[in-house]
Length: 618
Image (cartoon, rainbow, N blue to C red):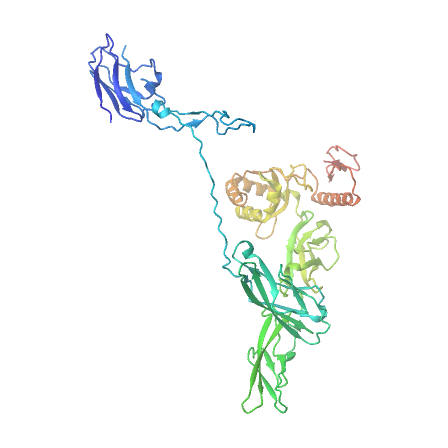
């Protein structure tokens, strides 16, 4: 708390005054000045201690007989040491600054012969406070230690197998010593050695072995002694390395079969296997009952098990049958056994999604333009992705991508008929195949004047991936069907690049068709594109993101060459690239693209004029 001082001032003779003492950090009125004459003018000046005016202000107006000196911000003794009228205010320091060493670390090298009590190093710290009692620094050496607490894991979690039962069926004729049959897996929630697991069988088997570290079960016998279907039942144990050790058990069922039960083509009442029960007493006979899956299997008086209907692995692979044996005693005895039946797959031919695929092309479609995609599925489990597609007839007009079924046009100029029919084939990994019909309709001839071009400020590799979305977006704005013919990174004088560069400007060539399939002239398309530019930008920004700049180009950029010539040129360049890759020329190869130019008035930069045609290297 500060006792506010009131002191008179004499502007004529001067009246230095000691205001008093105040605690550091104080905010508020410091002094009230009186005896101000009507002609006096008071100001706070920067005199001996300019820093003072940054902490204080004078509340006063000309003509006032009194004035008040008050703080602008909390007083700081570490900054403010002292403040024809000097007003002195002593600010009391508080200990609000810790000592700070001049260096964070000190290092010194001392000889082992240095005498005890010798000076080794001098350290120095400074305190930003100002009063002696707050700047008196005492040095000492602290002993600091680090305490680490390690928690020892207790083996309180047993291993857990990933499955209660592991099953495997194997044909004896296909078995080889060393074949991997199963892989067991168990986990333990403990840490360190307590989580390490070793695998073992509860009993020895001469037919299989279990790797203690990996859990892999391998075949150790050639099974030459197995003459009938045999079910090997084992108990696997997973044991951790804790003290005392914990363990878990799982059942392992390995069915060695002489012949497999196959699906679908299995006739009704086909024999699956046979069970036999012994009474140990002559004259006592045995009968059998099927206790489960009676709608699928039956058992006769001889213990023969038969399938009552065709089986489908895709629907159910395993059947666990319970068969009861009853003897002929007056008080009959009964016994029950379990029979495991695994249905194996019969290879079925693939099936195409459609019997006929139809597509339409124009005479301006470029080399490798995608026209239709055929798709087949394989009824066999998990094998549809392994189908291979091909064309049944040999042709230079079309090609198909083996893994996807995408059909491309190679040479549209060689289509002689308006409707071309061929067949595509899908083959599974076992050699079974199916075919489908593909019909390609060649539409009316389209002149290059019908090709429209826009440019986008996006790299070509991004635009190329968004071709289907672009066709939908442009078509939505125009109200027509749009077919994109090419996506390229060159300017209008260089078309159909083979080695594309990732420039940030891409040219897109396309045609537009009305509802009847007629191609719209490029001039009409251009007018509508310019008119609907705002809507076009909005739609394409949904595909490419904001900041898209679209320009409608003046022409298709063909520079006078016909579409037919460009297609031929592209095929020629592809052949050149193939020759280069085969011969492995170990020099720097500059790829030059040649285009046949049909404009006789155009000057050739490289080449000679031959009957109005020239060859230009671009």
